[in-house]
Length: 405
Ligand SMILES: Cc1ncc(COP(=O)(O)O)c(C=O)c1O
Image (cartoon, rainbow, N blue to C red):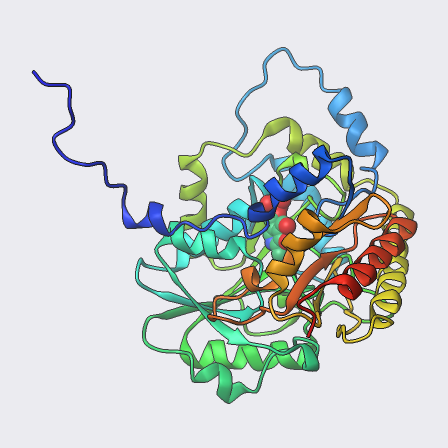
């Protein structure tokens, strides 16, 4: 028998259309710059440098069972009950039986899409969007329809008619993050009420990604999806400990739904993957006991970083950005024709006294062709002095860039 394959290998369409991270393209350039001895300020990633609360780390150190066993598919009962108490304190009325613990917020988004969409359906997502939504949509066989938002409007939702024009008979859900990645925008109560009314009128679910819930600045109030009436059947919340407790490696998130049928479906997805990580749930349980002063201090630190960053950026001629109200990202428009090429040039051809800067090109956060070409996403997860130095490098880079507009 010949061992030569008779047919050329063809992976399915899903494999071909699975997007790579838009930031990854630049990694080889950053590695080469580092090899040349250049120090890179990383403004491109959402990995916080804030120390994980002691309570959480001690729970990891203290784990002392003889067998590291599977837990319940919906998550450990004790953890779900403690989570329910946390949400009720946030005026989010849920019980432990309406919470499904997941392996990070990522699995929560994927499960939510799989539970409410058929392959071929579409979801409506405000754009620019968290890029991994595109990957989850490919996994679920779902089309992402962007709802356009504009930097000049602080990336808030457009008028109802603009949203409704994108709905058709295959539309199943809205998916949004607020506070938002990559914009930092916090949707207000009025615009969420509008979204709710559209969803109810057209029979759509709303999947609200609230992983940055605790990071809202300057007196703005976070409106949770479950602060609104009328969404018992149609509302799903995604949450995670990754950002809240600066614990991205813990891989613990959750889904909230008060719709029994949806919960039952999510649970069956949960059963197929057996359970979320046991030790990490115990650590996440301990994290819920973190003194509120820790979160207040973390929030203060991010707000101070935002202000330092925005003030410095707005002083750069030709750069446009607004001061977002939440999360730890912003989108800035640069005076260049192609921000992706500029980001690459910074890593390949520029340094200021041995320092350069890495940012995430904005077009990767858009589905719409050619949108975001002059934008970058900047994360403020560095110390204030490093942020200031990064902006100094960026300003000098823009001065020196041959293709400045
Ligand atoms: C908006 C948003 N949702 C979900 C996630 C996924 O988080 P997790 O680490 O919980 O999977 C992220 C991570 O950056 C995010 O920014």
